[in-house]
Length: 306
Picture (cartoon, rainbow, N blue to C red):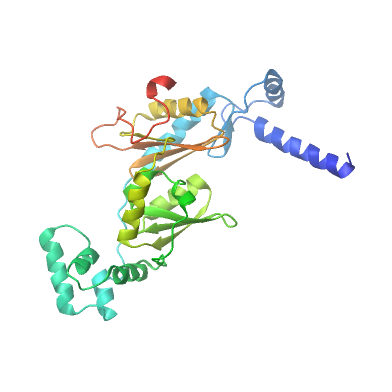
C-alpha cells in the first residue's frame, strides 16, 4: 500500500472512530472511558439534533429536553395578510369586473365557506389556471406548471399527515444544493417550511400549485401504505414522549434522530441505516396525557416496545 493510500485509509478510520466514539453530549465520557467502551463492544450511540448520546438513559434525557422545547414552540400559525386581496389583484389585471367580484364576495359571505377563488371558479368568472396564477403573484412565488409532474420519491420525504394538514406537496429535490421545492395551494406556511429545513437539513423553496392538482396527488398518496409512519393522537407529558421516542430509536437501531414542532404536531424523524421512520404527536384540546390510536399505518405496537 502506497504512503498516500495509507494516509487516506488512516484518515477514513479516524473519521469513523471520531463519529462513533465522540464524547456523549449528556454525560461527557472521558477518552479513557470511551476507549474502554469501544473495547467492550458498546454501541456507537445515537445522534440527536447533531449531538451524540452514548446510551438509552442519556438519549432519553436529551430527547425529553428537545420534546419540551418543541411542545412550547409548536403551534398552528395563520398565514399573514397578503399585500393585495386576490379579488382586487384579478380586478386590476382586467380578469374580473366589479360586478363579478361583488357577486363572488356575496356568495362567499352567504355560504360561510370556501375561498374566494373557489367561488370565482364556481360562478364561471375565472378559470382555475387564472386563480392559481393570481395566487402566485399574491404570494410572490412561482407557479408549478400544470404539465409538471411531482417527483414520486419526494413525496415520501415528508409525513402524509403533514402534507394533508398544511395542504402542501414536495415536488422536487435538488441534491447538489439540497433544496426542496414545496408546493402549496391554500397559502404558504413558513412555519412548516422552517420545520422541514430543520428536519431534512436542507433549504426550501415555495411554489403554488392548482387546487385540483394538489387534491389529485394527495388522494393518490393517501392510498399508499406508509409502514414507517406512526401518529399519536395527542401530546403526552414530555417524559412519556421521550420514553416512546427512545424505545422506537433503540428498537429500530436508529443512528440519527431529529425533533421539531410543526403546527399542532411534534415531528420526530428517526433515520436508520437504510430507511426513515416517523413519529407524530398531535396536540388535542383537552387531551394531553393519553395516547390515541395510530394513523393508517404503524411500525410497532406500543406494547412491543414497552
